[in-house]
Image (cartoon, rainbow, N blue to C red; front, top):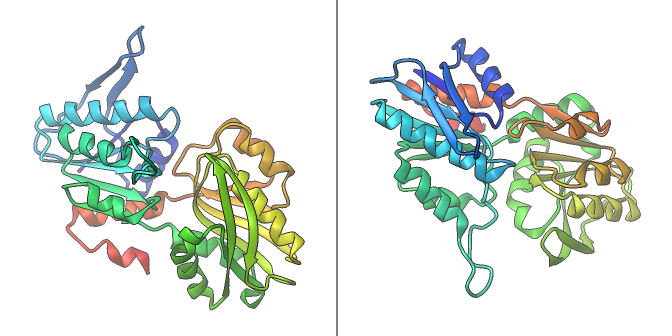
Length: 311
């Protein structure tokens, strides 16, 4: 088994390597003067089971091209099996036609990865579960819920005070799964989206007065929806509002919004490498997902069950 890392999240790749007690494969993933991606794998990978670790986070297009070119390099180097390990799968929000003459970009990206030569995909907390069906190769979608639930147990000693909140109707299934772990109540934020990255809270479904609320979702990008939801929960009587999010995209002025918001804390995984602004924000805390992904890699390499990790 070999581990190869692109440039999107070297810290996570190194942490996964430490978990597996396996050094990263020596390789160069660099740019020409005109920003073309160039890859040289400096170790023999012929006949190896190779796991290529690369999130397609910002800059999404550059990281996606790195992923595709690394897959091609491995294929031409006669690797036995190539698994694209994508802790964060970019373009996942474009999983359906939202209007006339619009693309389904998630399907296009799935086609690109498959045609490049990947034999398997390992990702975490897809924005929409049906994206697994966009791939014509085996796809494992890990859930970060066990990792985040463990952090909640460490920081909330009275689970009876908790109220798990879905920031929209689409995330109810995800939030209910977390609430079930703590035998906690569930609330839903009824929102109206006026445009990309813009939303307005219309109502709170559920009695949150006097409760410690935890907003639970798969990703936070501009943080507008999250901060508006936190403010609405406080106005409805919540004692404290925190958020647990799988992928901290946090683009633009998101960290500044979080810092000024009613949120007590925002907890994210390191599926996307934290920027300097994220690290400097006192309200944002990062929990590691390397043990989860590393264990999934070990199980795939040994042909063991991955679904047991969801328990």
